[in-house]
Image (cartoon, rainbow, N blue to C red; front, side):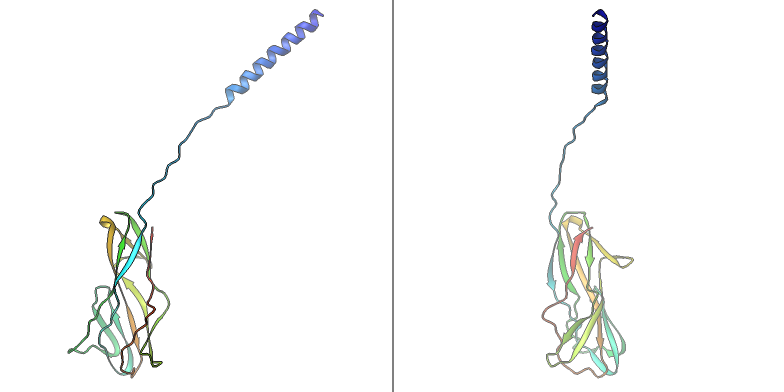
Length: 178
């Protein structure tokens, strides 16, 4: 019986040491969570694009309108010196969190303008006053705003019929935080 008591006492002591060694291996720490809500980015159209008055000869050509509303031509297209029109780049105001950068998405597909009588011209090769880094346009919201201007290329067919060409649905420019 003494031996049995000793065996139980030794077993209880070993169990006690084993339990305390397991308790020492477990450690924990606590962390907190936080979030910062920033002002949503937004874009507001302020001016429409206008290529101004254009004259065409018997050869197709283009009118290239820069984001600063400077025009140049190629091919059989000229700009009249009198009554050249109100050429203007499209303009937008981008607002959001100050000093944040954002990505600008310009149209990549041809945009069609029409005289309403099935005579069309295409607008493409959109460009803007943002920073072009390998085909990705970006901007910075200094003080929370940026005046974004967009230019493009107007493709004029040979002997394009005279008229006012428009598209009421407009083209889309998108901005999103970088």
